[in-house]
Image (cartoon, rainbow, N blue to C red; front, side, top):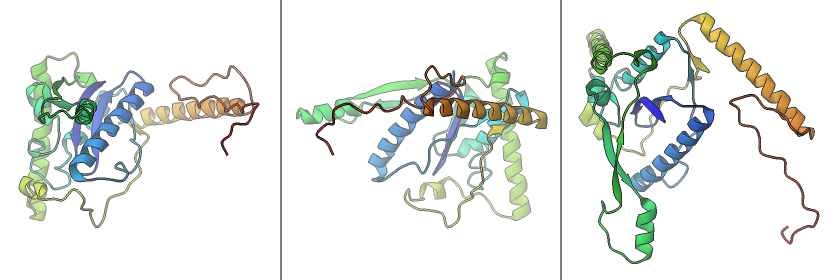
Length: 263
């Protein structure tokens, strides 16, 4: 998966990705969220359902402005909520430092399967015995891919400075300073806010109205073609063709000629 940028907040995350197709995106997100749920559950004693809902993939138009706007939105996380003064201060997992410096992101991958098998065999092992070093190299934002790395970093720095300026302006207008990193660290994983902002997510991110309308029309045609194919399949037709990029339903269940012993 080509990862452009990401940021993890206290109860959600944002990623800017360049998948090859919808299937790669679905497989990647399913794998990623499953691993995070298991590890976070291990660390913070989450015994029930971890994610409140499935991930929501939102298509970004081919407009350069739309891509840059998404990058700015991602970097603004933590600042626009009044939590930190700068994207560089956000203490959670974030690609900001890598975007500013060009350095790869390194971490450890813990092989829990090997740990489990070792425990079953009665082996003793340390925390890092089954840990491998993993590195993530970010992919450039599409409109910046032909630019040298130092220019891409300069563009990110300009966005960060603009966000920092917005924070300073809000502090002067309201007299309220951001919460700060120390206060963020003191928050409890199981705590819930008294009120949460709930607003419908857009189906697409686009800058120009005519581009958004074109994307909507394309989606409506795709949806209609899928429904038509699904209806044909439901009626027993064979060789039904679903639109490209869709997930056809599994084959219809065929009842056995002889009943099994199960109720």
